[in-house]
Length: 124
Image (tube, rainbow, N blue to C red):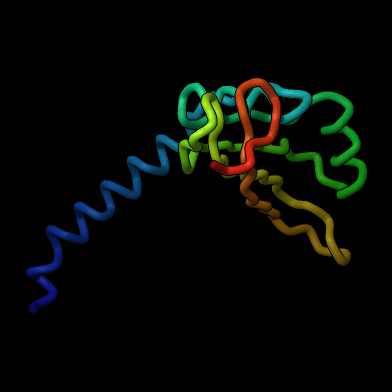
């Protein structure tokens, strides 16, 4: 296959990347003091996006020497058998976190089972 044959596919890939980047930047983030509102919203709508505010955010900023907002994204990855319960993936991000005397962007992703009523699900 010649390079000239790949140009249309590369242009299309570039468009998808630009659209995906623009969408990611336009996400409306809810200010939250804890995860529960985002967990419930992800159960109801499939995903939720927030920014940690309040005492917890202030503590984390002091602890890690970072002034950047703490962003939280939650998405449903599995519907569980228990009514109103989902397997959720939580991703937190913060830019310029001071670790070992170096500022680095940090990201933590984990999963949990959670029910709309606030109880954990056993994953059934």
